[in-house]
Image (cartoon, rainbow, N blue to C red; front, side, top):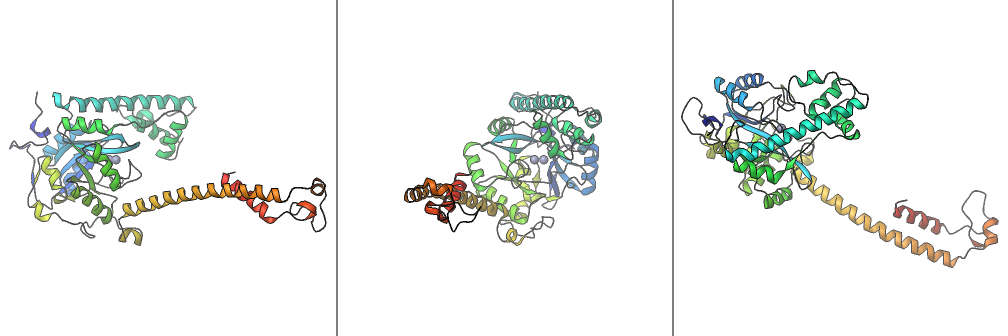
Length: 418
Ligand SMILES: [Zn+2]
Ligand SMILES: [Zn+2]
């Protein structure tokens, strides 16, 4: 059975349900959450907002689920908003988590090509429900009742996020970080991920497009540096980068647009809005900025090539975050961070080597000094003249031990890490 035309990423059938033709300035937002994952937008509320904000094309990308997608597509169709099916899959690559936006795979498909991708999301959902039940039991066994859990769930399948939210609501924790740490301290877990390569291959088989979400954020998923991107591409054929994001400065946008352009990758634009003003409302990104991706999703953008900037410059996005420090204005924030991290690592290595040599030198020196000043048993028990009680330990013949020896011993201890 084939999927309805609207759910096809390259649908061209002319009908009321066919994708719109956009002008370069038309507004799009390709990264939105709903109450299907950790957001609070209802499908209705989200479409109301998008209509009011004049956003023509939107993608619903809940974490690891597409439960809201069909409802938002249906409501959008009635109200003139073209909704692209999406999902933000929690993946793992190179020992770190990466959020991967997969566009263009509708959840109601039943064809063989989309089977591996649907199976992978079902697996992720089942694991999250298992972790949530485990966390709930651990929390309750630790004498922390969470009576608000049914209200938090409101009929949704229970995920760890809901248990964490109930922990906060019932006054056991101050915030999500606290709550997550508590679950881990109780022996549970609140997150799970799938191998990036597996997700990308399954998504591609289903005709999906894979875009690394918010590569410039270090606090959600991983911060992507140029070297990470090249290492990733050497192994896994991702399709694009979210080069426009709500927290980016123009410098970050310029960096990720350049990295994408140099490697022939697509560019996406997303606010990552989870609820009204949380952390931001959906944002009207210019269709021209992600025209190639929109084209792959069946949405054509007129005059996009003419409108698309070759080189991103400050001021092109009036809503871009203003850099906090002058350093951020003169160099790409991420590249500066990478340089700083590399120098810190080099410095740490150098310090470790220096400490090792210092320890060896110090020990050799201590041995040498001891050899020179063979202790006199009589003298060590009886402070000689010139020494005051409680002062410097004595050396042979009642003289103060060479200050150098004490310094070297302390140095040797410090260098050994004692
Ligand atoms: Zn994310
Ligand atoms: Zn997101």
